Image (cartoon, rainbow, N blue to C red; front, side):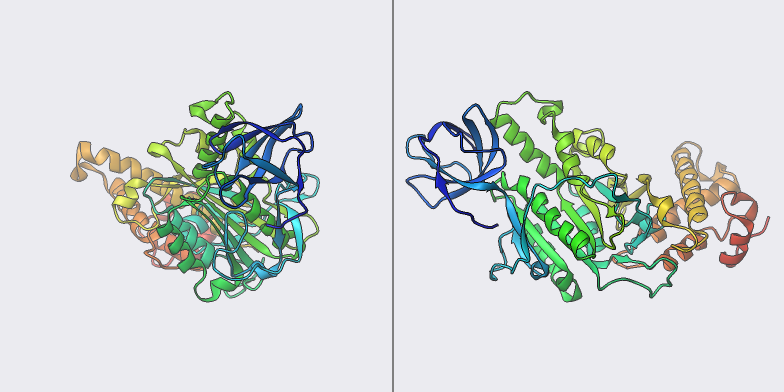
Length: 473
């Protein structure tokens, strides 16, 4: 974060201190979004930002917390500008804190320019429709819930499930395929990752650092870490700094950027804490009524700009309290984003890695990014057939405890066997990275024992071309 000339607000009077907030009277010089320095008789200055300014009164959120501040000895110095961050290629390979300052012990990155972190959603008039496939190396995503450039796709996870590990795998092994290209045709040199963690433990932070800054991944990654013991208020700033960096890489430098935000639930908890300190009218489960708008202001910064080569793709992780998908945070996120990847506790207990439940998962932009010329001609049909067979296999599995396997007809036993193999061999990868071709071939192997007449979602020419050793009608 950068500095600007400071000037004292005349006749400053702190009338109230509540949680991370300071209420300042006679503050006509302050405007919404301005950065301030809060000084007291104890300790160094603390950075703050104006949340509200009206009728000569301002509400300031203090990034370092208000512990030790008193009403009589506190002074507010205005910087006369909103929160800014530097942007530039020198930020690649660096670890920053939630406000964009170096956390790795290195010097301040050389910034090409300074930008306001409070960016705007892409203008619909210049937004280009996402239609280019991103290969994540995860079969359950690449095969059935495809991610495309410019998409915003959340991962819904329960507490304790390996969502962070999945996000790290995707971020380190994702590749953008050239339309019409072969398996070796990748745009790796212009693909970068901006990773922002909010409210994580030190152990989680060490995990992310070891994963993202090891090997070739380091030169194309920026990591922002807001730890659990960092100021809660800084979590509001963290995704905005990350997205400002990502926008510069994508729309100014023409790079393909994958932005990973974790955990959106921790961000929402920070919003709720600030709203409670401001004594705002609470909404569902105490969250502020404007949480939908606030989340949309972040997620809608993803996309592609018509006529520009770069793209900004968002992958956000959110934890569902009690595995409740109707909780306000996942519920509102689902309305804003273009699908969801859902992790299953049942699959995790069975040792399936990654434990992606493909039935409630969805990618609304999948059809735009797959097919002949983009992935493979059989992609859509194979995905539909695998989904239908697995769904029926799950139904048979529920009946199994009632009638027993011996009472099942041969057709149902075939679907039951596919459901088990699908989870073990297709969804489960145990750390293995698969190309799209390997994913599709694995899907065809699952259909080997099915008669052609039961594969109603696949064209006969695809069955003849891609299935090896299959049955006939």
